[in-house]
Image (cartoon, rainbow, N blue to C red; front, side, top):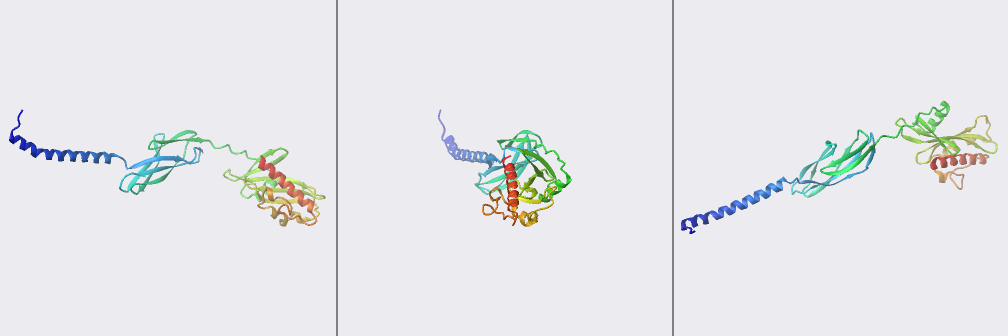
Length: 274
């Protein structure tokens, strides 16, 4: 087949136009592909605790990357059971990243799948522990406990070996501390010692008084704040008479002072070991 001179001229004029069209189409196609890619990318997620109690809240964070050359407003959705339970917007500079904090409060016991852009973590929700039974203490003992551990409204009895002590709870059921009452015997004194201990096993306060039926004390100073206040804030290592510990014995009542210290130490040790 032969091509006329006229046809060759037309073809020569058309080729540049075709080339330009192909280049323009290719550039347009690349631009469309690039614009179809989401510039906001989730790199990973971190669930801070895999288990929560009902009524509590699970916290997690997502690492979001902006891979474009412009600042972007990225939207992060936390999906649980096919529902968006938390959504955050964050502005990220070009080619930069940000951590986005999310939260979820489970409404039932069981396992949940927390999903952010296909990244998943498992969360277990458990029922809260049962509340301790309400213990009806004798009114006088209850008032004594509450004077030493303010805010305690309910109590739970605990038996360990031959000792009985009590846990004190506030109105929300949170543990405030431990309490006990014990008899300490000096040479001639019979003392009733009541004490409160913090959750980290430090003495909150103690009260010393004559035990029932023992109206006379050899030195009444042992039942005053001057002696009692020395116990405040002390832990096991400091509960001893000086120089081994931090407590000054009451003059003319060294044996009674030691008896009080040993009684408190004995109960504190039992509480710490139970």
